[in-house]
Image (cartoon, rainbow, N blue to C red; front, side, top):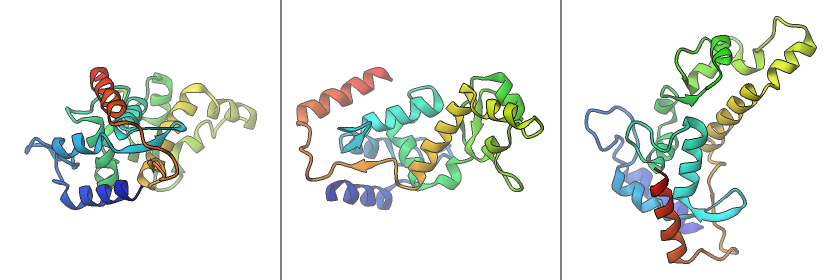
Length: 191
């Protein structure tokens, strides 16, 4: 557990503050550091797994794909941890439902996290159907596309608050090195 936090702090201190491509403005750790943290063991979905698994699940849940603009999942997660103020303006939240995108005035299939909030009304999903009768408003807010988008926003919020990543406590035995390597390899094959 202490090792994970130490590695996290070290990664923050050593982060390149940009991706591996010098022309990019997306800020994250470099690919070498991402490969290093991929093997750190965390608790995810009630089991011990490599950080690689958490990062891949996060990216596929939020973005719908296993990489973002050529970045590895670990780079995306660390980008959000290191510079959420930059990443909130990346169009990476998949909204497959055209009707919901229209209601939110989102162009294209991907929304920026910042587009889910506004200065006057706050979280925009809370205001969906506000012009409808209360029972209809509730139906809109409980529809599958709205719930799915709300879950994606919730994952990002938990990540930026430091509550999504749970290091493996010392009381839980670690995975074997072979098991970690196999799972990291499996995750790479998924890419």
